Length: 123
Image 1 (tube, rainbow, N blue to C red):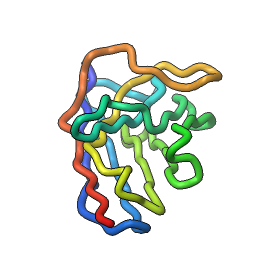
Image 2 (cartoon, rainbow, N blue to C red; image 1 turned 135 degrees about the vertical axis):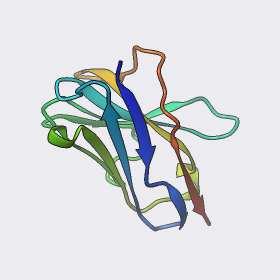
Image 3 (cartoon, rainbow, N blue to C red; image 1 turned 135 degrees about the horizontal axis):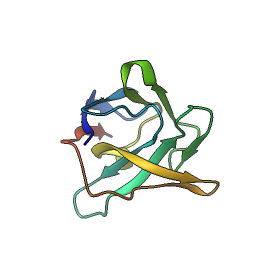
Image 4 (cartoon, helix red, strand yellow; image 1 turned 180 degrees about the vertical axis):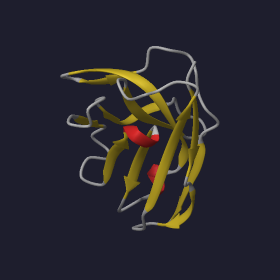
């Protein structure tokens, strides 16, 4: 069973940037697609970005396209999310997860979540 721990969240002003990291342990993620999700108070958890196991294919929610970049380093069992041009609507707890991807996007199929990392963007 893979275990995931997110880090890198914090406080940032609108227009700023943050880099999130997700480190996996217990199992290799080298042949698994990975994704980032986020949840704000009063809202459902939503998909943010995904990357194929090779790192060659990425998917992004429309709300973050052009601002966020997902990447991975399988040798380090790590998935990263570079977030630029942040706005208050990006505020939330960010989680990474194993996902399955198709030409239309990436989807979570298990029920495991790590602790997440808080991202707060002030106006």
